[in-house]
Length: 375
Image 1: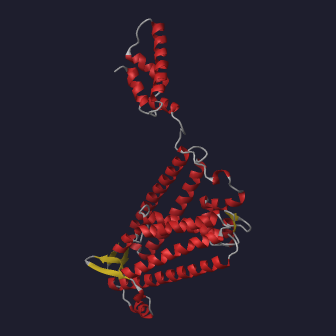
Image 2: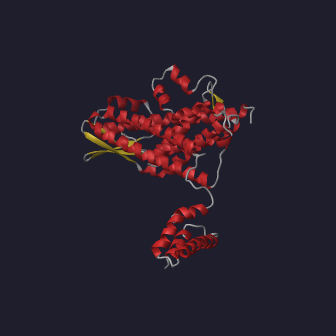
Image 3: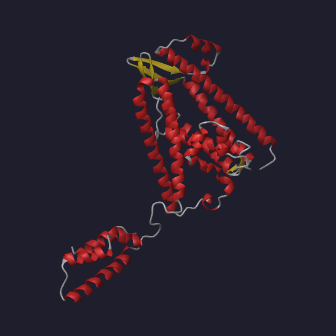
């Protein structure tokens, strides 16, 4: 095959099929005209090496094909890149903060495993960070390719910019002090977060709920790992934690429940005046949480602790929510079985409190619907 035809074939493979023939014909005419001009200048037929030199002047097949390709010529263009960069910085800071908190808990619980805890924290940060960057890049590429322009690209307001402090490491550092000055830096008096004043915590709560839910989803789907959740230490040695089958059965419902909660938080931020709509949506979300909690109580078996050749089940349920269970915790020893019993009782009480809060939330939203005058 002639070098020119081989070159055109490489270019054609990168072109859309509907325009391929016309573009290749145009490009062939350009190449042949340059070859003929060179042959006329030299008074002889060009060799393959001389033809290849002309093709090098025209450009690499990938570069030439890109000149004819429709649509954007970059994965994330200059208009979207600042938003991608903000999301990357804010997300990485949140992941780093979560991993640091997990590392602290693990080190306090098992100081002897400090080296392994550091290794797990770095692994969790890098795996979570790569997943975050990949998701942001994919979303940006889709928006760039299909020319999707969300309203926040063009209809932003200065009063809505407080949340961009999430990408400022200095503010995160100041917030660790918990001082009034740090709080004022995050939400100064009179400032608004997506249209809601900082004096009313609704916007701030929704924003932090969105962030916490996003981190939970990344952990739930296995994109990031938290040290100390899958293993801990007792006096008898390391203890591994294995989730019970109920968590596999409830994997999709729990994921959908968290995503639904994020949607309600999003409405709180973007439609602050839609109080009745928000109340209507919170009721089924809270009801779904009650259903998940009841399924967990019905299952009973929540996890299995393993230490060497010994195993003990972490069992929860309504029977653990009692004064007798609390007394048993106070009298329990530090063996594997006693630890499993303590965990079962503590988690049962925590789940019961969460379910009571969800039930109260349903009643609260029903009262708001009945008394609210806005739409």
